[in-house]
Length: 510
Image (cartoon, rainbow, N blue to C red; front, side, top):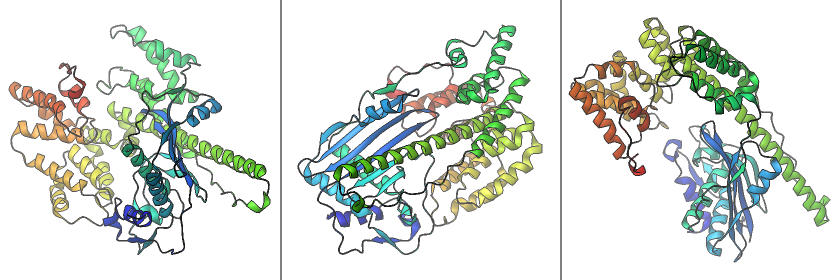
């Protein structure tokens, strides 16, 4: 179809359209896309659990010279900025058919002119999992330094900034690459190298935990790890240290009260540091006045200087967000570990930052039940009741059966996903099941669906109450789950329920 119509159709078909109650149109009869141009995205990806990766993807539309330029590198350590930029801008060249490049470029160009007709029920939305990056379009703009690169959503058309445009462009250009047979780099080139430039990193890399029966060595080793957690300059090591001190499968392995005190200190310091990190409001540069640069070289120099300033601001904002995210993650993990160790004094913080562990604490300590119910009330009536349903199931709060039935059979409010209804029905099915073995299997699946940990207290009790034959049936069931496509935390469940069963060598069965 014509690119103009395709742009409207693309937005209309985006997720969320049924909830918004709005339509889209282009009402600019004199607008015409340029005869050639460029659309580019400079992206950064990665978090505490995944390596940092960066790259660019650029669509150049220039007749028979049209091409797609791509790069993708993994960042190791902290390489010099110049080295990193050289690696990223060393792109792979892929020729693109003229008409394909033209259609893709013009659809993205027309997206800037799409306007909503009617009033949306809610504003733009983004996820913490969304990537962010720099988006530009030549020759007539825009340039956005903090574009959202997640799943495109029609709600973003109600956002006054241009941050949403990158998501639509990113989706179309990646689709173009896939349909043109352009594959990702493999293996992904690495830039930089790991350098242990402090004694604590060297200690973590080279020192294994002592034998369990060596109490003196264990006490010294724990003390050495706690010293790292007490050092604010080592916050980038907090996550692996907390995992060593409080392993998920055996959180009380090290019976040392110093661990609890230090974890609470980490939680408080990390929260305070994260709250202090606020991103400054960036003032947009005034539009470039081309009349002041009649000399092409002077104009090119000014454009390059503007580009460098934008890159600097973008990277500074990105690194600030990363640091803030790291502090918030450290606080959340510390709360999780305190909950796993059943530190009663930390219950309010655990409930706020790591509710799943707080549920287990409330089951073990009935005095916390009123706080748990208070925590549930606003979430049951909020826009995302799925979290409340998860909490109700984990705490085995059967008194909420009428609410779950009403929710499962009721009409969802506009804009609310049906996933929560499916979850409510699954919980009700488990609660109604009278066969102990079948109920245990249902609860195992619900455990995996909810993120895989911790195992609810009632499920542990339930498993122990089964006969030896039924316990074997549960282990066989969990092992069988690896052979089918299931959206659950399969490996974690295997570690809990079948710890002595070796995994198959065939990676397709893992």
